[in-house]
Length: 278
Image 1 (cartoon, one colour):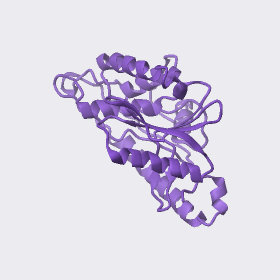
Image 2 (cartoon, one colour):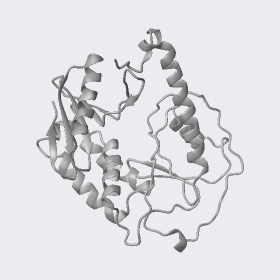
Image 3 (tube, helix red, strand yellow):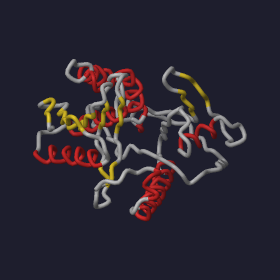
């Protein structure tokens, strides 16, 4: 039986297991932060929301960059509408080859942050080196598309999602406009526009814990204006029977947490379109 990862669970039979799982997540997050901030060779690009989510790495960085006493260096700040950009040194984007660009090397002599161990962190777990023609393979294209869809809540958030993926070096500037138009045409189609409406509650990549303690993560959970729950999973390959089984597992887990799922879908965004599972 899935156990919601929330405050109420602290006083349940599974309290010890949940505390251990939370401890493991914190340690994993600290390791990810360390690796992420110490392995960059040419450029380090970090995104964090401007909203104040207590106990997140983003809050640390926001406080750090807005405090003159917390760092020694020369950060430049520019606002581009959806994003506030802090720059230190020279930024490389995916349109440049490392061998063709000379970069002025700068270093931060000292950096001190007062931190709280309660953290939340997400990572881009793979970077795709481009071949000489600069084009993504079909697998890479599908994975990049999936990462963009992870960032989208409503149609209005598409621009921000594209800029975020571009900044991470996963899309060339020339590819970005094409990908943007492709995704926009898909998510504004009358058959799916409700799933990306401002009137719906959107939960992307929500973590569920199954009876064996394994983490499950549906791509998108939707509660419509009239109270219907919908589960949606994106796929970028060919149809497979196990995909339906996976979505039905999500439905069963949500049902056991008191959410009666009305319908569930697989969306093969590069192939056969939308397949209703429930």
